[in-house]
Image 1 (cartoon, rainbow, N blue to C red):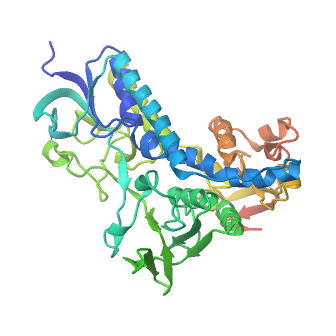
Image 2: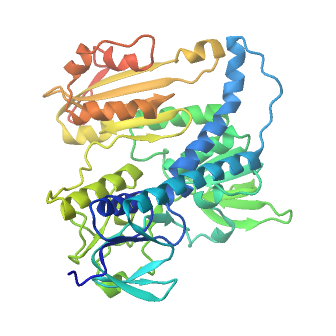
Image 3: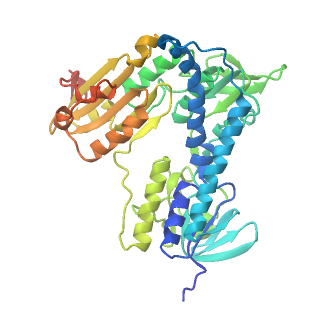
Length: 462
């Protein structure tokens, strides 16, 4: 008989925690999962899912405009923010219910409470004051928006969390940041008719993406009417006499807006979790340090997902959780594979990418072949829209292996998923050349770029 009340106790009901709890319970283990807010975590409740619904909503203004070029007469249209919020909330409720049902059906015990570590095998359930024990503990509490507390007036600002629950749609918004969240919300609010400004301290948005994708999206956003201020930061935020917000920048500008949004990164959600009491080691940002099997320095405690600050993506958290279950309960020690992760930025147009950027590949390989195509997508020909699609393939010249693929354009995220399989399989440029094109599609460019646009040798274009 076990000396512990549970085989596995999971703290955090996001995608990683729920997957681990459900799989372990399905294997007959006694499992409890504690969540203090709602099941589904950042992705389902206040992240990817509601964001993608907002993206869809924001695209309709352009769809109505484009329809005219195809012979449609579109009547007067209007947008109702409360309707979008209500419908979004209903869908999130449905998805949370599915998460709960999955756990219940597998036999996991659901605990609606904050939980904190008190030792290597013990957890305090705050709602009841009861301490329980478990052979293994999994921490999957995710991350939270960085509040940028050093900024005077930061308390007047919103984060992505609050953006999903605004009572009214602002007439003007200023968004600080240059990553996924800032760029996506800038496009969302602009598409919904909001006067939108993006301010970023760097020289170009989306710092870790390929330069062609960054510049191409920057141009497209500005052509739509989004103001992008690079090399600038907020110095202070204050409320004006008329109740609107005044955002003062390092360049001496004063930006007037109804909302100011801070999208300046996310921090591991480890405050007050009891990590010191359990002896769990953390890093500089508060992230939980883990080995290749997601185990902390305390043998009985594991962590997956954003709280480890490895790769902050929902599918990664799920993958890490599945590897953990293999390691603990299937006699199959599995280390998460963080190589060649496809990803997308749901901007407008989208970015889909997998593998190395040209800049990163040039540091790793002696010689590269770069294949690049830029064109007006077919859908834009009758609509009259000037937006361009950019496709870029990075090839290691020594073995012809494709080491990076980057797309800016409609449905780029969908393409990135399939291309991720190709790169994971180790496909070469010759494999792409042998593949028949699907015509007429934008993606056929990926298999019809026969000659390099240019070479990169020793880090320099030739």
